[in-house]
Amino acid sequence: MDINVLVVKAKQGDSEAFGQLYDNFAQRIFRYVRLKVQNRQEAEDVLQEVFIKAHRGLEKLQMENLNFSAWLYRIASNTINDFFRKKYRTPEILGIDENFDIASHVSVEKEITIKSDVEMVRGAFDQLPPLYKQVLELRFIQEFSLDEIAKVLGKSNLSVRLLQYRALKKVQIILHKKPL
Amino acid sequence: MMFNVKKFNKEIAALAGLKNSGDVLTPQEQNQIKAQILKAIAEPAAASAPGYFWTARRQKIARYISTVILGLSLVGGTAFASSGAAKPGDLLYPLKRTKEKVWLNLAVSEELKASLKAKFAQERLKELNELLIDQSTTNDSSSVNQASGANATATPGHIKAVNSGTLNNKHLLQMAAKQEAGTEVSQALQALEQVQTKLEANGNTQAAISVKDNILELRGQAQLQHVDVDAKNSNDINNNNAKPLRIDHQDENRDSGSDANSNLIQNINAGAESTTTGQTGVKINSDLEQ
Image 1 (cartoon, one colour):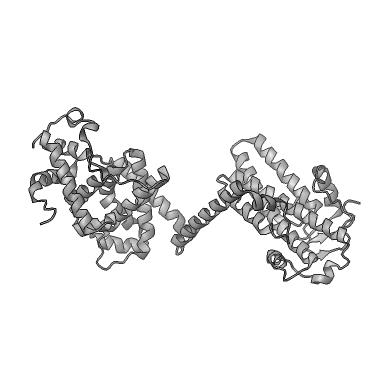
Image 2 (cartoon, chains in turn orange, yellow):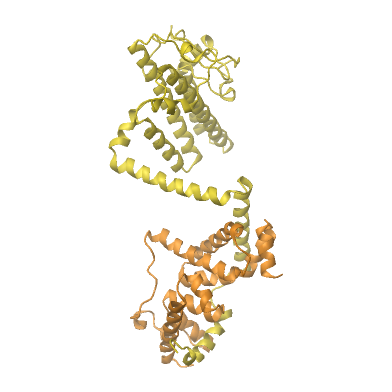
């Protein structure tokens, strides 16, 4: 069933329709949450919170030009930030670290047994700062537009483009050691 | 073009290949979380369907405010600490009540809430006692009946009115305090009875007996103060004959100590024999102790 139809039904209180929305997005949102929340159990809790918040927000959700997916990712972003705020009682420092030192992390060579290109890219992806991972996940895996990502992350279009460029550059540097 | 990503085509293509990799939820996990979500969204909807979001938000704000007040009471101390001895009509009395609400709000378990309610109910009784002492020492000759009429009702709102100086009437203040005490004692008894039932159901007999003792003690204290409680909670003490509000102006001789409840359990019986209070009525007389 079309997502927007499910949203309309869910707005009208149809919990089954909301359940179907969950089925459609749970894996993707979980992936997204896991980019920043390392602990799996905590990530599951955050995922649950995202959908509970989404359900509460449905009432005020405008259907006109609705991009439910982007809206949901936006909730996920906020929930992740709330999670860290509660956990550390301080605003999270987003991971834009220009001097990010790959060598200081677990080395790609040691961590990953390179059996395929996908695994190697996954290895490189995992080495990125969380914010870079978010941008790449949304842009090239979930195929969001730059504007949509800007809305999800609460940043300007230009910031997202800059982040995207830097993230890709970082991936390239990591993969340069193990070319595709 | 700024930030052109064309030169990263190879990396972009590789990243797109990650779509089906990475950490995923097992179907079992996914269904488990789904069940929890559907349960969570069903519960508040049943409680208060249309205004849930706003209610939750208000509760959140209330919690923040409560936390700030609690912080002030713990750290600052002065005014909040002084408010502990305040009684109805005092400037700091509203602060004292706010503190109590904060504690209740912060109590997480049913048992702790019940215990706090009982403590605060006892505090109301103590305040009432102090008001009566005040009256007797100032030798105020006007009667409550004159002040409010034989069938007048006093509401908690009167406390505010008296606090703000619009009604400078000690008798009315007493009536309001008595009614307030009655309400809080009833609520505390109800909460304690629920805890007792729960403990009995769990087979925790010893703890249930202990709670029952507390219930009896609180009832006894209320009885000594002639404070009426709900019929549900006073069945085994009172006859529950509904009586109109009547406050006799003969309180001077009553036992005025706040610790006068040391022989509470024994006094319950005496009180039950000598006093009959109604479901809606409030009766103050000095006969009980005599």
